[in-house]
Image 1 (tube, rainbow, N blue to C red):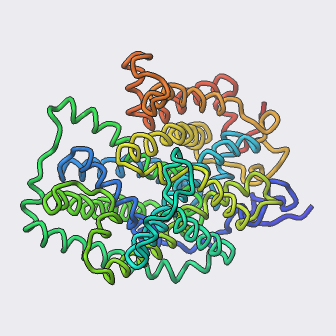
Image 2: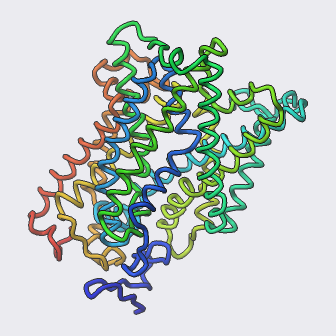
Image 3: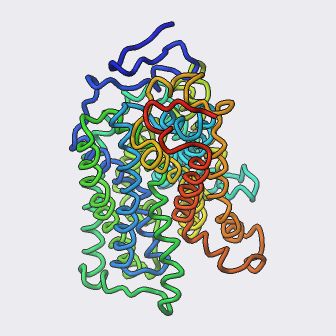
Length: 503
């Protein structure tokens, strides 16, 4: 048996089918990320077009500037809690997300939350790729007007014009080429993004203030809700959507914290980087979107559509090329690395990072990302809130298992063992699977009425309204159910290291 010695108490079997170099624990000697590395990571990931669109969608939905900013700040402060808690195991044991969930779902059952998280990441990959491709289209159509009038190549139900589709596919190929080259090839693009996007965002803010006759008239734009009831009907699902925006990272944050020099580094870095960066960049989106109402007489929530209205071909071209490069950097860093690990967890010996990246790319097309961001209502209520109903329950189970049952103690070697304590029965922990389903169930009626699969009056109002709190409902229901099921099967002491009983 080939083994790797990481610590006196941790011997990992390299010959196990659950082991691969990508999923192996990071030894303490190779953990180099400090507080400012994590702060920089969050600042970099926050400075992206979807953050701007998230903020502007709240303005389009009817909020005024301070209501939108408060909702974003509160949502990011809330999601910071599971972010830091789930990051603890990564920093302590050096393990990625797919390995951590083996302790709660089982060595084979871990594929369930890993795939749920991976599918959502594929959706984000598709959205970012669409944004990058559409920025290229916005540039090319100025120089090649015929691109706007190409014959329709797709069925009407696809909602996809030929010109944008061609640019989307070309940008998708560029993403796949970067995957082929490897993650190291993206470092220079990340540096470019770190300098360009803040400058571009500030330039856009300056334009909005100048063209909108100063900051005062912009911030005086009133909310569009008839009364407080209408406001709260939008606020709560919007807050859930803000939490859902980073619900994916709140699960797979161990993929990053496994490189932390200490727990303090990952905690402080995330506290410093996440809520402030999201709030500040969102403020720019809020101001610019509010200004469009004054400047153009209509609210433009998509920054690419807004940039397309500028008169200078050269200005639009430079801006769109820069957006495409920045989006490419964000896409690989935020939406390829983690799902590639999740897909690799399905068959560690057969699927490597490159193959996992290709799988992500294909699913990213099949999700029809252009429909997910066609309007702000769909972006918040269908996409952000919808997938939060799947990921909230996983987060509740992970935190309940690691903090309340196992008291932050894991048997590292058994996480990679086919016969260890985390195998449970046949590789699946039924308690986790049942808790996951129970947490998802309350949100299904509301989701079906939201996407108009069933009439809104076909279910009681209070049941469909639960969907407005999808992440919160799933998180707490699944966490509580999981604790109850596990404690009914095992004695509390059996979860302390070393755990000796498996079902």
